[in-house]
Image (cartoon, rainbow, N blue to C red; front, side, top):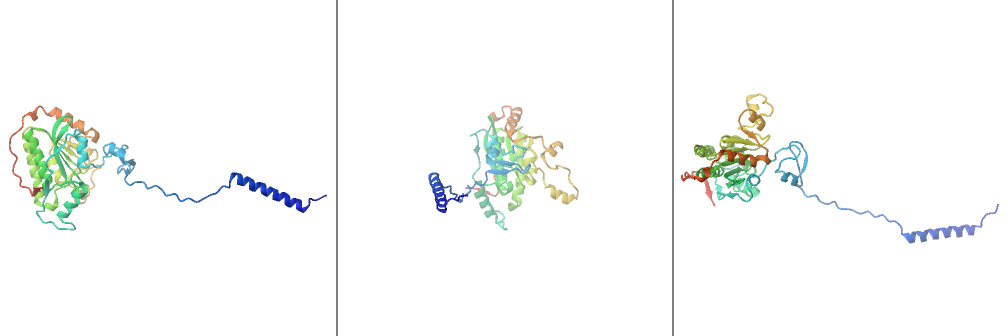
Length: 324
């Protein structure tokens, strides 16, 4: 059998190689490069986890739903300003007594002095103290309103909180309009001021007693948590006491009670639902229904009383507060 010359084989292989090179040159050789892609930074605070059902919620969606979980209806805390925006008619709120600030009657010292604590919380919240008070309208009905804010020393009641609430009540009595007080995660009396803070319990209740004697309405709204000195004073003496769902309400926390009496407390003890069943509160109202429910109550209980203002003068101020 005849074999092809070696030179012919070499020429054939060379021609095939040239053809392949021309083909690759025509279409180009595929190249692979390693590219380091920088991940986009996701802004913090876009998502919130529900404390009740552990669902992850888009923060904007939560805010649009008045800070209520859309899946389990858990009510997140609100700031005093947010509550006022939700409750009152748009643009109707006019703040009163915003110039009142606390002084340091005991010269309190600790890990932080009282002055340092006041200063840090004022910078953190933009508030002078733990309450905002003033006048506005609810579906057109004039009201006086005061709302505490848990971000400021846990919403505790010092002299400024007691004084602003008392002035709001007295102005409501004078103008013969309802007063609404929202315990926005309210705590107890403020230890930094000692007996001066305890005096606010009696002072606010005395003002509410005069308001009641004038035949005027006081609506108290309890949120999570409403405890201690606030619950034992103005929050517990409303003509109508509303509460948000599952709010912790009481004087002392359940853990302290269990340790004291050495007994296991009933399921749901001190929650809104338990207290409604046992007669401490009048109704449980979801946040999105709160404004309309208040308007109906005011309509049912108010009959032209705002047309007859009382000219009685307010009592003298005896609290350790100052204006600036």
